[in-house]
Image 1: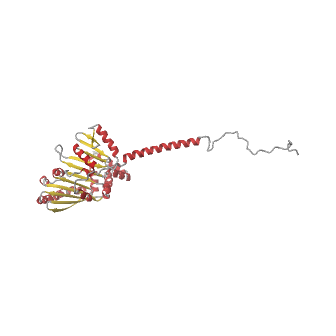
Image 2: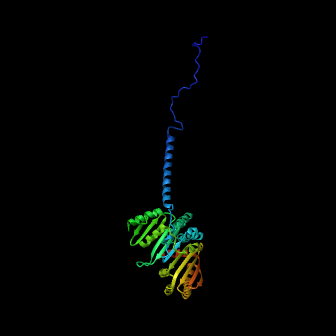
Image 3: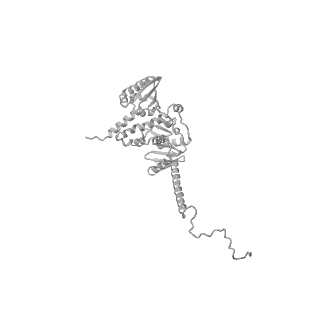
Length: 364
């Protein structure tokens, strides 16, 4: 047979016929899913950028800057000082602060109108664990105050504080306030905000220092820059035992003891005084009052006067729910009085109730 014979049908081809219908891209109908994906990615990126921005602002506001020990402002020439160490490191002190907020806030739960100055306790109370965390942020790492006599005012005060956070916003606030008041100057390359008539404040990294006398402020800034320790041999010994303690010398003794109820003629015979405070529990304190008199005879009289002052105040203690036990020791011209105080939280609650009752409206 002739292979070219037209009677033989042609062999079918294996190639598919071309498709001439509508074309649909892979992955779905048209470009819909691709556009939605792009929108979702864009929105996620915006949210992520927002979170990063918020985190950056929070870090800027909350992060701690380099601090200087505030006790550096305490000089040997100071007539008095007060030192407050980190109360967050003391479990009893921390528990007391948390319980105090809860106790004083209960007046609001009973529908009593708290004074405006105590309204923040309600929000702290309602905040639960978050409120306790916020309260811990408010307690400084360390605070030191120095007192000196002055011819122009009863006493000059210099305070240095190491806040836990918010130092950068605080610096902005100080600068803004100073620009509208006394202006800004520099001491040892540190910006100092001036306030009328004679006060000022400076923020040295994470350490805030302020005073009601600018010359005292300048001296304190220089001491903080040099990071000198306290010029007191007894400071380290006191700091080991007492979270809060203070010393006052002769020129300022009358000012320090003005409200204690001791006879002025006996106060005049006090050469030096020391007091220390620490928490025995979340509801109790141990306080010491160490008085150095000008003679053994004066020390005996001071011991008796302190005991009499406590006896005269016993009715007030009982009314407030406080229990105060006094123990005294006499050694030459020195008398030491130790007070064990219990019932602090109950006394705070009664105080809040009385304050609320004074503001409660009277209905005829």
